[in-house]
Image 1: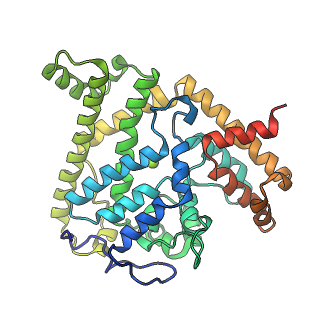
Image 2 (image 1 turned 30 degrees about the horizontal axis):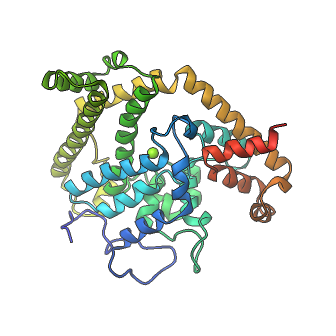
Length: 370
Ligand code: MG
C-alpha cells in the first residue's frame, strides 16, 4: 500500500461507521465506501441530472455523472501527489452530488422555497440523507452505512442550526474546524472540474465564444501558447488543448502551494489538520485567475438569457410538482404514499429531489398536460 502522510485519514484512524461492521477483506474501508456509492440508485440517477444544461439539450454536455467522474479524477491525482488517502477522496467526490435535485441550482432553490416552512432543502444535507437514510438496499441497515470521514466530506456546507441537530457529523461546523484534507481536496476538485467543463460546454452550446474568453487571463494565456506552438490547430482541438492546460495549471499549483503550506505548518496528525486554517489552496496569483474565471462564467454563462429561461422553467416545474403532491398525497406512487403519512412535506421533497431532469419533466406533463 502507498505510504500515507501522518495526517492522512486511514482505516486505522477512522471514526468508523454508525453501525459497526466486520472489516472488509481485500479492500480498505474507503474502497468499500466508494463501491457502495457506485452501486447505489442515486449514483445511477446522476446520469440524467445536470447543472447548467438540461439533460435533453444535447448528448455531449456534462451530466452530474460525468462531472462526478471528472471531480474524482482530479481529486485522486491531488491526493496521490500529497500522499493522502486517494480512496477516501474518491468516495467523497463520487458521492458529493448525490443529493442534487433535477435542474441544478434552480431546482434546489425552488425546492428550498417550497420547504421553508419545514426546515428548508439543502443539497449537501440531502446528499447525506441519501447515503444515511434514503438508499434502501442492505438487509441490515438503511442507507449505505458509510464511514464517518466519507459522510463528513459529503457535508460540505451546513448551517449552524442544522449542524447542531446532526450531532458528531456537524461538530466541525460548531467548533469551526476543517474537515480532512481528503474532503478539502474533493471540494476544490469540484470547483476546478465545473469551472473548466462549463467553459467547454458553454463554447459547445454557442452560449459562449472564444473572443469573450480573451478577457479571462488564464484562458487567454494558454490559448495563445497553444496557437504559438500549433499555428494550424483547428478550433475544437484548440478549445480542448487550452482547457487541458488550464486544468493542469490549477492542479499543479494546488499541489505545490499546498505542499509548501503543509511544510510550513508541519501538521503531525489528522487532528492538527482539523484545527489548522485551511491547508489546501492555490497560490495568490492562481487563486485570482480562478476567481476571474468564475466571475466570467457567472456573468456570461449562468446569466445568459437562454440559461435563465431554462432555469425559470425548471423552477416552475419544481414548484408545481411540489404543490400538486402536497395538495393531494394520493398522487404519489404507492411506496411514497406510505412514507408520506409520517412526514408528508419531507417525503414529497425526497421524491422530487430524487427525480432526474427528464423524469421531472415527464411527471409534470403527466400531471398538467391536457
Ligand atoms: Mg459538483
